[in-house]
Every structure is written in structure tokens, then in C-alpha cells.
Amino acid sequence: MSSRRARTAWVTGLTVTAAAASLLTSPAAGAATGPEAAPSYAFTARILIGDGDPARGCSAALVSRGWVVTAASCFADDPAQVTEGQPKQKATVTVSGTDLYAATAHTSEIAELVPAQDRDVVMARLATSVPTGIPTVTLTDVPLAVGDEATFAGAGRTKTEWVPKKVHTAAFKVDGVDATTLAISGKTTNDSICQGDTGGPILRETDNGTELVGLATRSWQGGCLGTPETETRNNAQAVRTDDLSEWISATANRAWARQLAAGEFSGDGKTDAIVIDETDNKLYAHPGDGQGGFTGRNQIGVGWGTTRVITTGNFVGDSNTDLVAVRDDGTLLTYPGNGKGGFGTVITAGSGWNSMRLVAAGDFTGDKKIDLLAVHTNGTLYIYPGTGDGKFGSGIVAGTGWTGMRLIASDDFNGDGKADIVAVHDNGTLYMYTNNGKNGFNSGVAAGSGWKSTRLITGGDLNGDGKADLLALRGASTFYTYLGNGRGNFAAPVITQP
Image (cartoon, rainbow, N blue to C red; front, side):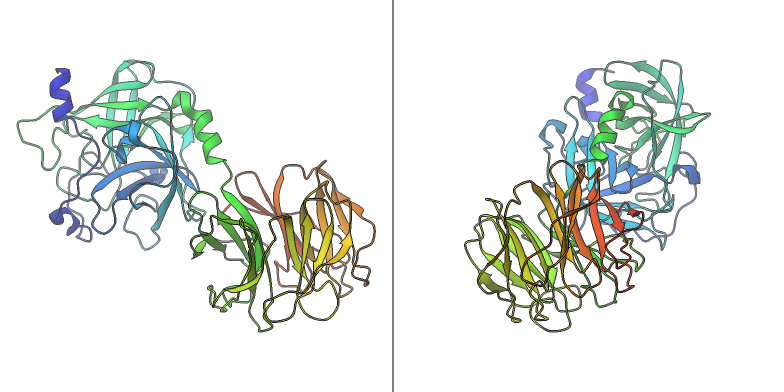
């Protein structure tokens, strides 16, 4: 084929017309371009781009509970125009085994795109991670060679359906390999890649299982619904992923949570983890399971990009958990919780907090009102007594020499009714500072080591036993819940990968 004709005849993505969109809930037709996918291909996902009726659609492969990999050309005709950050248009991912319309289907908006530098590949992070039970694709660094066979899986058109309910597959052989791409052709006339299949995984079956070796990018679409009957070619082009396996893994493991707090916000009696997403600057709640773990996440706020620090407590004196935030301009704000996962009218609680780098909350003064604890950039530790109405009194010096402390969290860890502090030193040592009942704290006692990789910590009763626990965030936003025994010690962590 000539290169000129390839530019006009090959397609990427799916343009969903009104007629196609109306078929989204229609029953499945019979034959497909290739058979329905086996359960082992349940990592195959559908991407729809555009607010309202989708303007484009593609396929993808789930590489972790929070990330899919697909073609950058799903998001723009020119892959070079896809930039890191939020998608320019609303985009959603649906994955649920091989039936994309099953009652258990998981649909999430895409929060972040991370394009590869040298080819038509992009990683897309889901705003809400898929539940456990749906498999992820296995990566490999072993390339395909000419003459090898591979299987394609996608969610695009078939011979008879515009928008099929089921993931389908097709068999291909490799005709050519270069530094970044694969030339492939269908083994039979029924093996073709259609509109909506762009970004779908090219897979190799091995003794170790199914491995990802590439992603579909362009095809002649012979035999696909809507393609002229005179077009019988079913050869296609794919982009290699074997030499991107380390980059894909590293991207899927990158951190996204910028701030962390814990509190019972939804009214179900279970403590949730509250985070700010550093990419979309939204506030999310990870519902607690009542045993120290967390399930999924729910958006509970927008516009949190200028927030430096957050902490939680009952600051306004009702039965709901509230949130305090320090903005970049030094403004201290109290967000009264409504007990239903949202907030009431914001209270301006102070100003001039620009120099406060760490903040925690608890009853440090013993008056049954929740106070703030803050570490100044000069290393001074302050207590700001709560007034019970969402505001705070003047600071009380509670200690000095805290410049070496990287993280702090507070709660009554030793069960004496007074709020204590745990702190992570720059050298990775975890210290416990018990409350001395005199607006200060006793000398620190080492409570653990190896905390250098910990990014954020917070305190709270995370399993509902009335004892204070410690929640740590590590790696790609993996939660480690250390359940407290009420005597200042912690059990081995409950680990959750949201």
C-alpha cells in the first residue's frame, strides 16, 4: 500500500454517531470479527472520550487496579499532542471481565494521562480503582519476531455490531518488526481490527500465561461493520510495548496522593481515608471497611490544588467529623462535615499559617475540645486550642527542635485520654511523644525504624475497637494500617492498594 493511501484509509479510534450511541444497550448480535474473549482476557477495557455522547472510543489493557495502557492516538489524531496531566476531554474507562455491560462493570473517569516519549502509547490513571477480582495483564520484555503469532483483544466494532457488549479477539501473524512498531495481518478473513479497537492489547500466549507485547494502532478494517465490502484487507499496525515494560510498571507505581487525613465522613460508623489527588486537585474519600482496610474511592470535593496541609477532627462540636485545611496563602479554613460525605459552609479560622509545615489535631489541652498541633519551619511546636466553633485560640509553645521531623500524626495512642504524637524523623525512625498533661509532651521514644519511604501519616480509629491506630501512605499510594493496642504499640500492618 502507498503511504499516501495509508493516511486516508487507516483509522484510529471510534467516532460514535448518534445511531451507534443508540445501540449501547441493544442486545448482542451473533457473529463477531473473531470470537468472544476468554475470561483470561478480562483485563481488556473500553475507553469513551467526550462529555455526553462520546466522540471517540478505544480499547485498553488494565495493568494495575488504577492504570490502563492504550494508544495515545485514542486521545488525539496526532499522538504528539497528548500531554501529561488531565485529559483535555472527559474520558471514562469501563472494565468488568469480558462483559462490558455486566452488572459488576466498573466505570471510572480518567484522572491523568502519562504519554510515552517515543511512540503512540499512553498510560491512563483511573480516578476510581477497579475492585479486586478483575485480572491485570502480564508485562514482558521479550519482543515478537517475524513469523510469530499473536492474539488481539478489543472492545470495538465487529462484523455485526457497532458497540458490542463483549470483548472480542482476533488471531494475527507478525509480518514485520522495527524499533517501535509491529506489522501484523489477520490469519483468516474474520480476523480484523476495527474502529474502537485502537489501543487494544496485542498478546502472546506462553507457558507462563498471556503476555502484553503491543497495542493496536491502525488497520484497514476489512470485514468490519461500516467498511465497504470491496475492502478485504485485514493487515494492521501495532506499537511495541515489550521494551516499555519497566516504564509501564514505574508509571503504574507512581504516587498520586498529595495529602492524607482520616475520619468518619459518610455516616456509616467506619473511618475513611481522605486524600488530595495531586493531578486533578480533587478531594477523595476512601471508604473504610471497618477492619483497617479501604474500598475504592469517592470524590467529595474539587479545587483543592492550593491546599498544603489537611487534618480532621470534631472542630465545631457536633457529632460529625470536620476537616481543617491550610491554603498556600496561609489561610486556615475549617470545613464542617455534614455526616453524609460532604461539607457545610466553610469557616475562616485564621491567617498567617504560611510557616506551618506540619499540622495534626487532637485534644491536647484536656478541655474536651479538638485543638490543632503545628510545626513551624523554625522547628517550634505549637498547640492552638480549639474553641469548639471551628476556630482556634492563640498558639502555645509545646516544644522546640522539631526541624528534623518529616511527618507527624496525633491521637490517644497510649489510652490515657490525652492526645499524643507520633513523628517520623528524617532518618526514618518513628518516635512516640506522649502527652504530659501540661500543654506539652514527654521525650520521644523510638517506636520503629525503616519509615524513610513513608510519604504521609495520620491517626484514627480505623477498625472501630476504640483504640487509636496509625495510617501510613507508601509507594504508589498504598495504605498501611497499623492497628494500635491502646498501650502505645502497633500490630503488623493491614495493607490496602486502592
